[in-house]
Length: 65
Length: 421
Image (cartoon, rainbow over all chains, first blue to last red; front, side, top):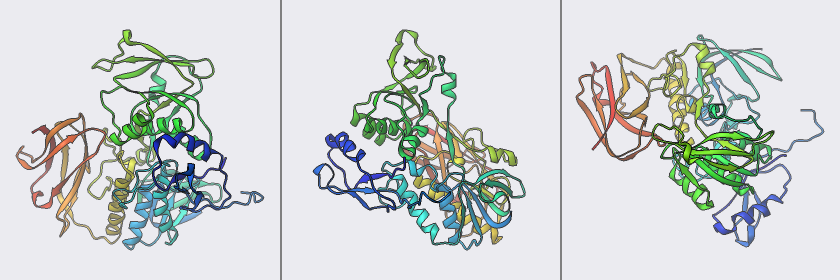
């Protein structure tokens, strides 16, 4: 499963972490992805954005690798 | 396919990346970086947690972001990079044989080589623990790769053996993905990991950390079902009356890192038995002129930031070597580990460098101690210099500066030892 690593732009309250993980688990994005790109605005209504921490290229799956 | 380069770097992790960029800055022209994985960055892309770059960039970054700082700069140079390329042999005269799917077999002649292969995780603890051989036993780093890169969850009820940084970070990572981490067991009375990790990974998630404990038995038919855990005595022997069972389906091992020096040994380069990396001079050059090394393959570091700094030392040194701009001391000065010192890097000082004021020396202590003096002694045991330190512990590398003025022409050895103040 192709993954992109993410982080919250700032710290969010500790008590929200496990619920936030569930919210994050349901998010899908399309490649290409750039570091710093906002993946989700206002995570868990904290006002804090979730951003990508890795560059992911788009790969055309019809091409033979 | 036959190729020639001024510099070939084995390993595209933080060490290799730093060497490539610094060598380029020091006018080294033809540089080739060889990496066996699909992507650059070494271990960093799977270290999605924070804490990188605080020293080097004065910013707090995650592993992949830290790696990208270097990879992005690399893309703006004319440094050649080959990924999914495995080096299978290096000869003492700097011929490299490598293999990949596109080029087939590569024969590369290098003027200089940098060994930056990093390290792998110890697994012998799993082999030594009595019991069944069920599925569900991973090294912490493997579990990290499964979760963060491949997208698989290794298990649901976890016991972690070893309180090193990787173990603690993975205890938190598994918890965040919904697993239950029942305990982190540490055989020593102290952790070798950073205190910050104990607090942010274990305390914050109510994961129990048990010092002086180890796993004495693993049970399970096809998959791990339970472990037997015991307290250990001062000689690290299990105390049978303290045995307890913990049911679990997954065991993560975080019991140490081994520098990957198979290629190094094949060249015939001598390794330090304690670091398990090559013996080097202050330029991180091995006993073979023009073969350098840095990063975890030389000695296991605590922070990627220090690996990058070490890579810069090598990048500069490669430039100096190619310009034939070096003056050797005769004899070289050996740096000898004394009381409570496990190892020192570099192991000897080889050069006379006009204008150099001091040399940074790195070491690890054998046992934790507080309020100590780090003493530098000459051949006759006279104190050349002395530094105070509040706390020293094996989990945090110590560095001191060796002033150039102390490096007398006739000096052959400097012994560094640690004593209570």
